[in-house]
Image 1 (cartoon, rainbow, N blue to C red):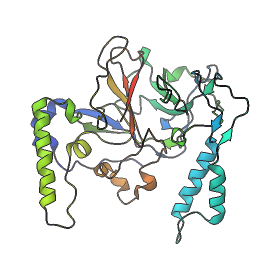
Image 2: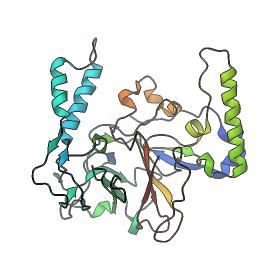
Image 3: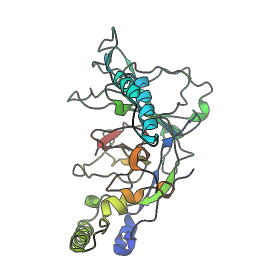
Image 4: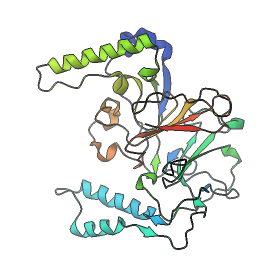
Length: 343
C-alpha cells in the first residue's frame, strides 16, 4: 500500500511568495513492517552484500562483551505488539510478563576483547531506482548500504555513534551473503531495526527557517507569533493548535532522503566537506518516529485512523533521546567522507 502525505494546512508560498525560490524536494521513505528481500530497498532487511566481500566491522577498541541479545529484543517487541492488540483486555499475561523479564536481561559474551572486530548492523539499503532524491554514488553506484555499530563508544568522548556508509553497483553482485555475521549482544536496543519495506513518496520541502534570508525568517517568526496569540485568545474549547512553519509547512518528519536538515535542537552548523570544503547536502535522515504530537499533520492519509503506537515507530530505531540523525554527503564527490548531526 502506498502512503500519501496530506495537503499542507496552508499554502506557505501564498503567505511568503519568496519561498518559491527556496523550494526543494525530499523523498519520504515511509518504512512499514514487512518482509523485504535483498533486491528491495528496506530498513532492517537483508542486504545485497556479495559473498566474496568481508562484512563491515567496527575496529575501534571498546567494550562490547555485555548487552542484550538482538533475538531477545525482536521477541520482546513481538510479544508487546501482540499483547497490545489483544481484546478485550490488552496487555501481557502473567506468563508473558515473566518471559518479558527474561528477554530484558543482559548477557556477557565470554572471551570478547575490546580489540576484537565487531560486526556492524546492516541498518538500511537504498536503491536509486526506488528513491527520486537519492543521488548517484561514486562511479555511478546505484545502491547505498547504511551500517552502524550497536554500541555508543566512539569518538573523542567515547560515547558517540559509529556510522559506515557503503556505495556499490548492484548489477555487479552475483552471489549474495544469506547469513552475514551479527553482533552477539548490543549496547542499546534502539540500534536494532525491525524489517521494514519502503513506500517512497516525493514531497515539497523548504529550508529550516534559521537558514532563510534574515528578513524572510523574521516575517515567518512574526506570523507564527500572531497565530499563537490568536489561538490563545480563542474562546473555543476544541481549538486546534496553530499551524507552524517548522512542524507543518517545511520539513516532514520520519525517514527521508534529500531535502533540508532540521536544526531544531542546536543552532544551524556549517556542514562543509572536510576533504574539499564544499558545502554538503543532506543525504539521509533517520528518525525515531514517523510523526508525533507536534508533526501530526504529516500523518499519511492511509493511516489517519490508526493509533500513534506502534504506527509511528515501525522501525523501532531510536536516535539519541528520540531524535533524528541527519547524514550529509559531498555533492562534488560522493566518495568523500560523510558527516552527520543528531537533532
